Length: 301
Ligand SMILES: C[S@@+](CC[C@H](N)C(=O)[O-])C[C@H]1O[C@@H](n2cnc3c(N)ncnc32)[C@H](O)[C@@H]1O
Image 1 (cartoon, helix red, strand yellow):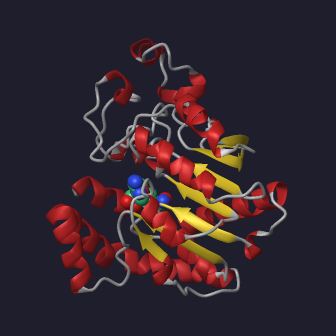
Image 2: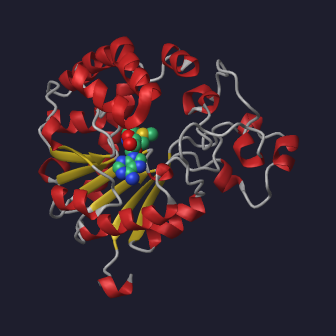
């Protein structure tokens, strides 16, 4: 909890992070214009794993787009006691306390900043909570509720949390809910990057700062770091490429953080890291994969 608090105070999710959200929306808008006949504002959009603070999804909805989402958990938006009780029952006291604390201390302000960001684009914050579906992306049932074909599917920081066997089912559901004109925009955190272990001190904006106590760089690849407090499927960039390629053509890759942490890759660190991880892997971090459905029949899959 203290690490998380420190991370927020040092600026995680700060006001200017809505500039990044704007960049992400612009990237998706541009990808639609390159790879689909539909513009983003005439697309049916689905976010996979919208998270506890669904800023992207709320932003798209507020801009007037036809956007819905799926996540294992409902977000804590303007929390009420009943919602807190549900989180307590389902996820336990730690996650409940974390969520309530985060809303009171930070989220409230962030929704005001999100509203300011939207005003700069001619809109105001108007989330449509009924379009946030709760369910497991690997299950048929939630996809049936979502229904039909989507023109744009996107996810950020989600695929690395899905067990590998389930991931194949998630990708096959995506495939079944796309047509050949659809675009998927998928940005997992790659395990082999310096940020891939999900250690607070090695979060992207912490890499050059070091405010938070942390293990050695890439320590999650050498066994020197203590594990993440969340499930990780430990997939490399090569693993994701192979998993996506079963159903999709990867038409673009955007490596968002360049050579983040290059200053920590000293000769000693290089020698400690297993040699199968080359520079492409060690500097992968967060890759945006732009995917188009392969013209496959179900029997080919
Ligand atoms: C690290 S958060 C990212 C949230 C959001 N995309 C963001 O960028 O802030 C990962 C999210 O993925 C969701 N998630 C993980 N596995 C899932 C699954 N099998 N089905 C649905 N959601 C899942 C989690 O509940 C969590 O909200």
